[in-house]
Image (cartoon, rainbow over all chains, first blue to last red; front, side):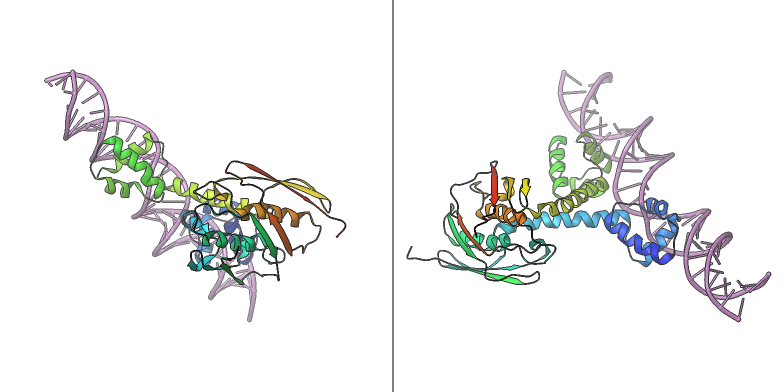
Length: 155
Length: 155
DNA sequence: CTGCTATTAATACCTAGTCATAATTCTGCC
DNA sequence: GGCAGAATTATGACTAGGTATTAATAGCAG
């Protein structure tokens, strides 16, 4: 595992990214250098210590737990008049797309429309019974999808 | 904040559950007891130390990150013959239902069907163009939904 | 007042570091 | 070969947030 400083530091980056729990001592063994060298490397690359890294990962987890329940409606509702009309916005991120093509998966678009349609109805027990869907074009990662829902009073 | 041992320990449980990052010293101040008392309480309740708690939270996060990509197909695929037929199973959990009624939200059922339909097609770039959906009955939390996909060679 | 529980204190030790300083080793270059 | 400068290693003092152990003290019931 002996190598130049540059390669070691590059590998250090990716190793720590993949295994944030690894200590300096373990890294030192892995790269066959002293613990002090690892520490100098971390300094230069401004990589924090294990406990800090673990804390950061845990913080993300807590943030996500708090963010999830808001997702009852998929996409952000920007306008909602019960039994009238509603609009929601969904930003297509990496979690919505096929990893190969970066094109949004159909069910996420349906989910946005469906959850907005259910939200607009002023009834505790609104359920989807029927849906006729046409996907008119592809949506790519980074695009913003706007859903509009309205009530057809003639039905 | 002075109180009996029992109440303190109960509150300690919930406090730590809500704020896993809190140290014994901070807890001691919060409950107006000594640090040693907090430590005895943690022993009795078998609550690990801060760094251990943070590590556990972070571990969950990493497990989830690893679990997500498997979800490329929603539900578990139990049979797949490319360009022929496929079957997947989805267990309806609390994350799939309306919190009030415990009935599965339509877009999760669609997502299962849609992702299986896309998976069965032996093409890197299969996309959903059209869908006619009828929801024939409600699905409740705890139920298991089986999706079957087939290719219509006549189209 | 004795006995028991609860609480607090004191001490040694641990991990995984930081920070600063010094010594050593390696490398390129004339 | 010699030597400067970079890279590496070593050393010692200090930190947070603990564990584990032993001992002292406070409060109260019988």
